[in-house]
Length: 431
Image (cartoon, rainbow, N blue to C red; front, side):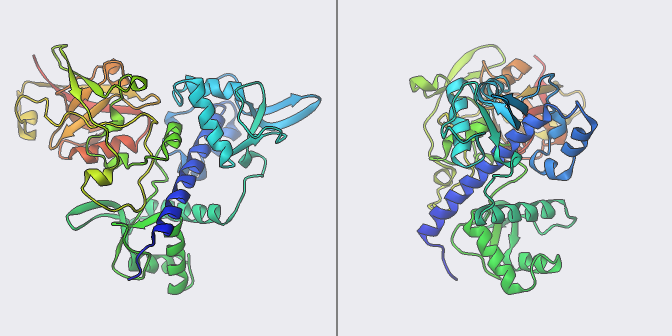
């Protein structure tokens, strides 16, 4: 079997990041449009279409019911510029909606979109994004978005992903290989059979060529990163979760990407304290209000944590540009608790519902353990603490899904691939 060269791996990783930028840019554009979705019936129907919901599956929860328009036709020097926005207003919007913690970060984020040809100055007089009363526009709104080969492969991959996610009895399944469980996987030969059956390709040769193009563009990968795409029983997976809600701050962390949804300590749930001062500690708040410091060490990537030497296809960039850190490995629980104990009649536990709206750096908590999982740490200044979360609570459900039987990597994945507004049911011991 042909193995993948380092140059191909690096190019696929670069293309993968470019795809993430495109998705994040499109989500921002749709967010701006969603602000006005309730103002007219036509806009509402357009934004409710499957094409838009593919980018924003939780769109109904995030409608921006604002009075003013962010993207609209604007007049400047006796000329009208359609579908544009004022840079300063968009920077304000990013901060107000927790997409950026400050103006400097907001400017860096928008510059990233300019560098990847997502937005541009309406007259192309400025190559830099300036936080001023200058007019910019999303290239998709004026037909200048470059539809090159890379973009066409990306769009083809997204279309296939959406079809496979929505079809009954999909070939995408969770499978194990060498005792490691992988999500959204498929066998190479199964994908080829499906492509031909659905009329996506005319024959097996054409299907293999499509699969290899998707792999070379960082959309799919061999689960261990060793092989190219073949018509075989090798196991592959979609590297991109097109439906995951991106946070723009992910775009600033391309140099140290990692797969948060598979991270064993769910670091992006817990926020770093005083990152500018190099502090490497988290706060963990006990139910008795006692505060203890949880030591933390910098982590490089999930592959290093898992003991893997595989450098291929560095996972999805992290939610924030803040350095990640491991949480205290020692459980905060005084003793193990079973599901049977939690659910037995008369057990000294009460169920609470917490609604947590994440900010630019996460929700502010860490989940650990398994069957049941518990809250290991809570950032006292974060959204979770404000909603009433405490350590030692047990996670009963995530966004309506019963999770007492799941382990913490699975629950972390559910949280991180879901909407920003998180609804958790927790069980807390009666004091």
